[in-house]
Length: 164
Image (cartoon, rainbow, N blue to C red; front, side, top):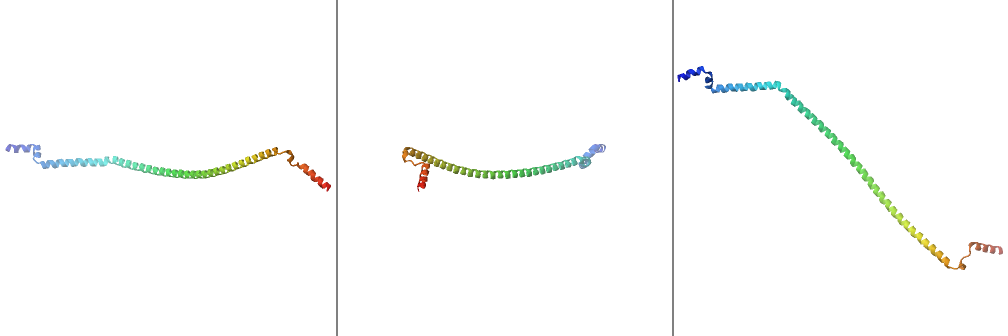
């Protein structure tokens, strides 16, 4: 065993292996130093990509806001156009109702006038028949029973005056 004691001081790896806490502490210190150096290195050199991300994010937000505003404006424009179309449609419907009323009145007048024309035609037909029957009756009666023409009556009344 004395031989082992003599070998231990000459081999430094064996001496570290004998103290595992010291070895773990040294490894931990190296690990912390590495992480710290990486963090410091990223803080100085890695800030540009971080800033680029922030700028890109802000630009995206600005574009989104602008697109949203444009969408709102277009929606308002569509609403106005739709309201104008509704108003125009209402005017056309009102005009159509007016035309329907005028057409109904005109049809009623046309019907009334047609009935009046039919009544007049019937009256004319009645007069024609009456005139035709009067002529037929006149043609059937002897000419003796006819009245004297107006010129004979005039001469007769003139004779009475001259004799009187």
